[in-house]
Amino acid sequence: MERTLVLLKPDCVQRRLVGRVFSRFEDKGLNVVALKLLRVTPELAKRHYAEHVAKGWYPTLEAFITGGPLVAMVVEGLDVIRVVREMVGATNGLNATPGTVRGDFSSSRQMNLVHASDGPESAAREIGIFFQPDEIHAYEPTIRPWLRAEDEN
Image (cartoon, rainbow, N blue to C red; front, side, top):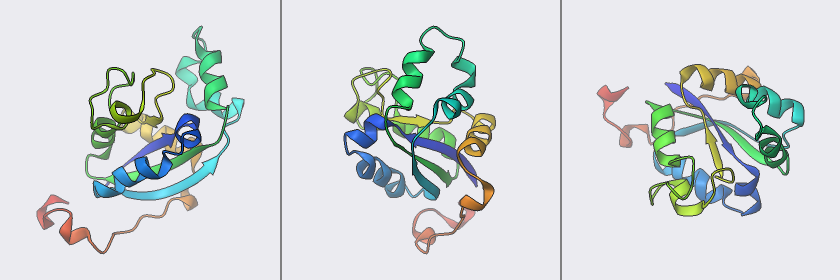
């Protein structure tokens, strides 16, 4: 099973959309195998957004991501990185397709509710930033036979 990091950003928490967004992943049949509410520090923001720290707009990003609590989770499933990114939608909420999280709830590029890892390497790195190995709890839901065919493992 593939894993990805999903962050429900401070705007998602403040707008009380966490449950609605979280349920979309469960409704899709994906497993949430780690979950926590936390406040991102400037140091943690710099680790997570390392590739953006030198950019002129980074201070605004850091102020946003540290401005309130967020929900971090590890989501697991077949081809989960692609699936989650498609479910989340285009980065700019104004360009996101209706039916995606951002298409339904966001009208901003920065305040776009959700972060989702963009590839296997970044997913592994990002999961390691937000979670210790003993905080991840893989399991197979009892409804698994009703989610996909046996040969689709």
